[in-house]
Image (cartoon, rainbow, N blue to C red; front, side, top):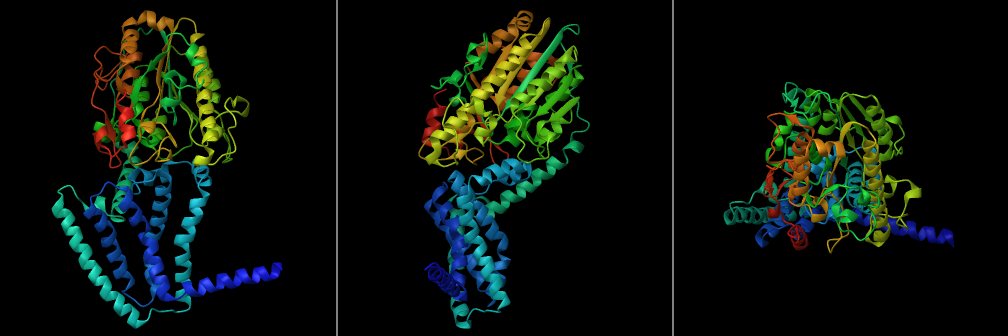
Length: 573
């Protein structure tokens, strides 16, 4: 019985392969497969009706013409292999984010994301990956077989379809001309796939080259910084960069679940209510947090150094510790500026090695025990990045069940439990640092914390998870930002404490303000410090909210194609 069933399955597969190996069928099959991204993007993107039609017809005409240039269809398919791979990538991203062409930042993420993080993400989307592989690899296999067997399209079929292809090309060209005539803002390099995807790839290569040349372009930079605080007074400043932690899941921000049992007991903790990031991607946000650059002048970042150098010039001993892997992002270059640096993941070559953020406590204590009069410690955490349940020890799984899960809406309860557990673990970690700093006698100590960006967890009808989408959402933008000052510091600099308290209720851009705030709190004087951006100053000014878009342009936040839900939530604070 089993043998008969196997024969039937093999016969069915063979029959399908025989059909697919017919060159005319393969012709239309591959043409249809290549057009899948265009059809989806014509629906998801903010285009006019004319632009939607053009975004399908013009690329279709180009593919059609290429297919009719030779009878050897296998060569045509392999010629378009790069487009096939790009289409597969595009379909996966549409599955994850629901909209937008492959972005410049998404190409950059391919070289600035560590292998373990990529493995975790890819492992969570095996279903769509399998579908994409079948869709886009199968035609390549069939094309290879066609070439080996020297199969050709029939002359009559080719002649007929070439005539149709020329007609479609004329229509596509006319539609494209009409799009340009209808709008001065229209551009083929941003409005038609795959041209816009290749344009973004070109911009990504350009940005990557700028990253590669950073050491050369910034080597002569100096802050000419000095300290306005007493040289005889010991000072310790700890800067913690959070990862993928959104404010709306913090109890301190009104969340109904007890995710901050420790921090809510901390006296005089300053919680900033209305903080937005200017990017939803780590390789852009963290460098802005640690440097004088923001979305409005982002390109300055390639010729300037980070706050670590400013502190060093002012006489501080500096340390940079990271729980993220080495990448080619700017933050790794900033780390090189520190007197002492360590990446927790370097302790093991095992890709599955998963150090917890609390391991920073021993490192920070070791630096403090060295007894330098002036110290800066920067901690780059892994916070709440997916896979959420891997960010805390199992015995701290307060919200259960928190596993097993996949990033599907059907697993939302487990996903949310795991995500909230990761925030609860961050709560303990930050509380432990405050306890450590509070126990140091005769020292002015301070903790400054901010998350790089937030996260989506199937929060509305879009059913989106993760971050890094081309168009951000409220959930990716609203981040927690906290400041804790020791009693000794408050007594020495009461005006800064009062300013922080007063400004905590105002709108703040973390990307624009964090650098200036840290220098202000530490009393670092430099012409690059602008107190109108510092929330530790009475001179702080609220500015229009901006966003660093995928082409590295600063645009008004509300000019983005965000949902009504996002706009409503952003207008609430």
